[in-house]
Every structure is written in structure tokens, then in C-alpha cells.
Image (cartoon, rainbow, N blue to C red; front, side, top):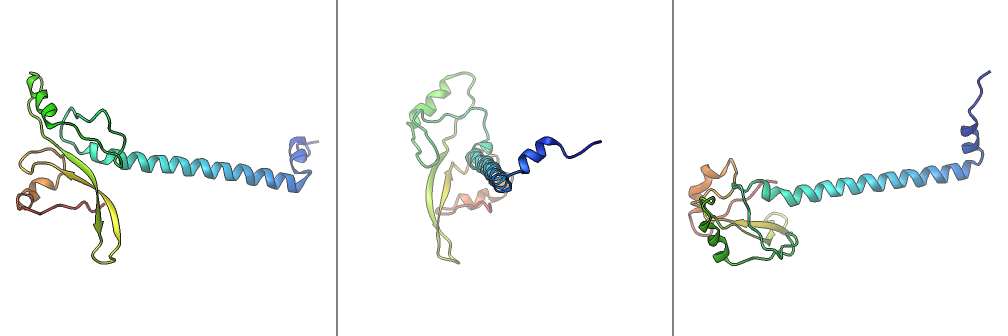
Length: 146
């Protein structure tokens, strides 16, 4: 004769305690899933710009912490890398946080601003060659839709 398993009977003997334990486990699992989702969003945000750098080597300041705490270094250091026979070219890319006001809703947003000489291929963006002429006009910028 096969009845109800003993373990299940012990779990459900005190219904309130079982419900509290189940709620606690569910809450912990939801928190872990939220943490994994937040980690993925932060990783994608942090790697979005470096993914589009058209180069094999990127020099960054040793004091760089994050996009919110940028540290620069001397452009002279960048061009000193040209003394290596393995380096074909260097292109400075400037990155900083900026404020942008949405003209429709008038709300202000923090955005990452990336600057590079428009005549060089510093960023690997498929839209860039078609829009390059617009960037050569002073005070023109390109916006990413995302």
C-alpha cells in the first residue's frame, strides 16, 4: 500500500509555518533573479561603448573607475604608443557623461557622450560612414536611438 509520503506530511502538518517558509523561499528566489537581471543590465550598459570601438587595443587611464567617475590621461601618452612598431595608428576617443533635455517632455536625462575625430574610423558603427559628412559640420552630433 502506497500512502502519502512522510516528508510531505511533516511539511504540511503546521500549515502556517509551511506557508511562511514557502513565502520566504519564494522571496529569496525573486531577489536572486532580480539581482541577476540587474547584473546583466549593468554589464550591457558598461560594455556597450567598448563593443563598438574599432581597434584591437584600448588605452585607458589607470584611475578609471566607471562611466560616472571618468579619469583621463595625457594625449602625449597615447601618441607615444606609436613608437612601437606593432602600432599602426592611434585615435583619441573622448568619453564623458552629459545632460540632455528631451524637447518633448522637458525632462533631463544623463547620457554618455562619445567624441572622436570624424575623419578617423574610431567607432565601428554601421551608420557612421553615411552620416560622416554631417559630423564634419561644427556643433553637429549623432544620437543613438537606444
